[in-house]
Structures are given as C-alpha cells and as structure tokens.
Amino acid sequence: MEIKTILVSLLVTALGIAVAIAGFAAEAKNRKNSLPTMGYYSSECDDYSSSPVVGIAIAAIVALVIARTIITATTGGCCMCCRTPNISTFARVCIVISWITSSIAVILFIVGAKVSGEKGGEIDVNGVYNCYTLRPGVFRAAGIIGLVSVLLGLVYYLLYVLARSRAAEKSGVDLELEKPPVTDFKEPTNL
Image 1 (tube, rainbow, N blue to C red):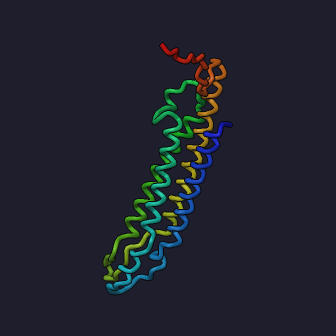
Image 2: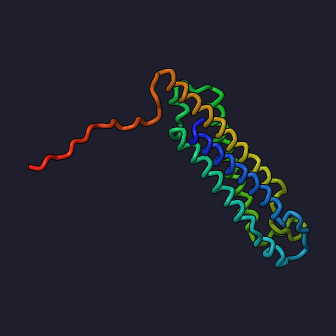
Image 3: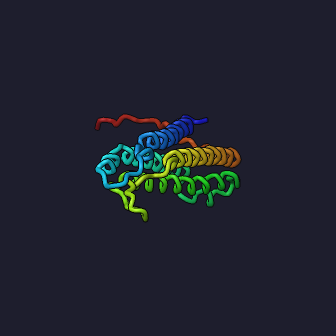
C-alpha cells in the first residue's frame, strides 16, 4: 500500500471513532433523560438545557463531514463510483449505503442537539408540566450509524484504490510522477 492510502485510512478511521465517541459522550452528558416529570413550571428545565450536549453533537457532525469530504476528495469526487468502469458492484453499494447512513447520523445529531438545547417544557392534557426531553439512545444511535457510515466509506475508498491500481497495471501506465529528464547544461561563453 502507498503511504497516502495508509494515511487516509488512518485519518478516516480516527474520525469515525471520534464520531462514535462523541455520540456516546453526548448520550452520557444528556442529563435531561433522567429528569423527573414536574407538576409545575420549574427553572430546572432551563438549567438542564445548558449541558455540553449541543457542542458535542456539533463536533460529531463536523468530524463526520470531514471524513465524508476526505473520502469524496480522494476518490475523485461525488459520483465517481458511477464513472469508474472497473470498480466492483460491492464498492458501489458500500458508498451509496455510506451516504445514506451518514445523512441519517447527521440528522439524528441535529435533532438531538436541537431537543437537548431547548429550554422549558409543555403542559400535557392532565395539566402536568414536562420538560423537553430527548429519548434515550438517540445520540448513541447517531454515533454508531456515523461510525458504520465512515467504515463503509473506507471500504469503498480501499476498493477504489485497488481498482485504480489494477487498471494502471493493466494499461502499463505508472501513476507516479516521473522524474524530470536530466539535460546537459552548458555554461554561457563570454564574448
């Protein structure tokens, strides 16, 4: 494997792990999950919205977008899987599923951050005041789905690199840059 392929793989894997860790950290920091139902308005609902969950969710989204950008940039851009004739169907399926799952993860992180950041609550039919809460597991699911998305993108990237190197070997063209030719240099004569 080339150094570039190894570095891209390590970077994308690290970003995927960061997305998963951020999902689990946001789930752990989401203190409103354990907030009891209150019979009257309380400022506790406003205090619970000040947790760092929103920042963690935004960091996870940024890591996921960076990973997607790296995969897209190193494989020739969006829809390159359709334009590369010698790439396998499995690789094409991986990238499509990767795009779908990354979109789902981003949506879950955004919705989770929005609900976690809301202050106040609402009065239900029985007149009981409930704080806005996020169902347990949303951030955890977003982290796992984000990790799966990045790993599927990595599988696509590795299969893409493999297909490109096989195509280069088949055509006999070397993908590396050639060294410039060395020419004889004549010193100018003094006239």
